[in-house]
Amino acid sequence: MSYALKFTIKAKNNYAQNLDYLKKEWGAKVAMGFIDRVDIVLETIRINPFLYPLYYPAKNIHKCVVHSRIILYYRIKGNAIEILRFWNTYQNPKKLKF
Image 1 (spheres, rainbow, N blue to C red):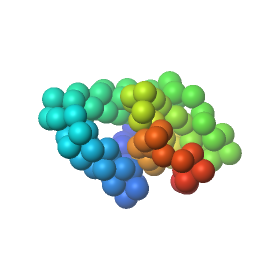
Image 2 (cartoon, rainbow, N blue to C red):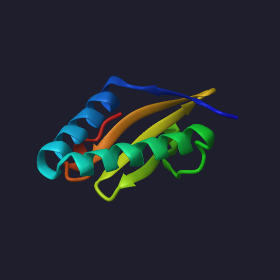
Image 3 (cartoon, helix red, strand yellow):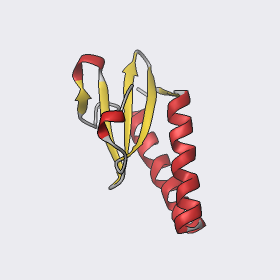
């Protein structure tokens, strides 16, 4: 079974911010590598959303490490996957809200 992917506004903004940072600080090649990695992870989640561990069971939130400094949080809702956040681990973890 394949699931549809739906992005929250926060997830879209987080993704854009991380991509802008990578382009600015590390260049286009690193940014493209990040895009490729995210595409692979999203396809994997779309096909098998239960592959990655539950982070917050009460809210059915899963956690996927995209890169050593970027974590993707998502939730399974029926036949859809709701992409919640692309969290940069340099941030204060107390600011992580869903």
